[in-house]
Length: 356
DNA sequence: AAGTCGGGGGC
DNA sequence: GCCCCAGACTT
Image (tube, rainbow, N blue to C red):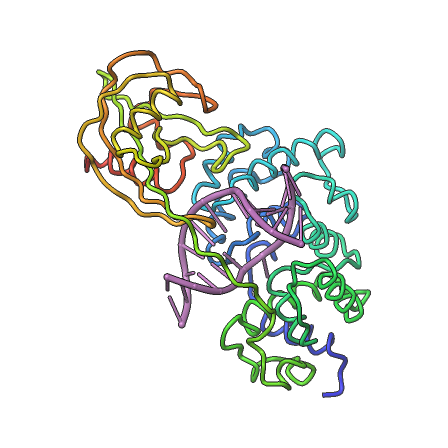
């Protein structure tokens, strides 16, 4: 057991590495898409999305030439929808400026939208064999524990220390497997809570383990309580049963997705007053707010909502886009093809199932 | 450097 | 409930 830590890590990875989809038929494009989808997303969650996405967009060019709406529809449910918009934009940029081939250096990769320090390092090392570090949340946990390194890993000084340490461990001839092994160790052994140190090839090198303080790293900062909002949404149907939907502005929260129009309740306002006001402000129409159909709870990263869905009747005016990208009357069947946030998709499914 | 950006799994 | 996940962008 006198091997260098990196050799023990690589030996462990060769035996215990998972057989993940993007580890087969590795092309820079496939690695890139996987890394983007895996951002803040568990491999198990992302798996089915990846297979579907790659079946529909097998090449970079097919992605670049697809309509954004279709890309967003395949992304629906994954969250962080700007990833999909950036991925689509980057594919078009690579097609124009690089002849459809991803650049092979960290520097050039990082110029593409949606590619930051981590993904640039991951693609450069895993797809192109370049000696670049790639430190995600998993690797960060492993490295801070190995060093028992204090401090918020989001701070630049801490990140620099982790990168320098990773670089010092990295075998120059196997940067990709080394980076993947570090992440795999974090994902399957060096867990946030109850790490399985008895199965860890680096336990003897781990300062936190020696201290019996594994779970103290990485140090985390306290979280503020999430605000809670009451939100309303309207189901407005025309004489043919078509439903009024609005597409959210591209650069906003849930940008590019279609929703039932509505909005946040303001201080001292009733839910019905809120909805009538939102319809005036967003769509320039007067509505009669009818019965409440359903109430849903949902949590986002920075706030929680209670969503109250009302049936409404159009009284005056023609819907226009005052605070969104587009409004459209769609049939219940057409809703299936439009990208929507999960809460709106739940409402849409209830409509489809005649459950409302 | 801090705030924003989804959704779900696991405990 | 709370934490965290193969992070990046904006201000």
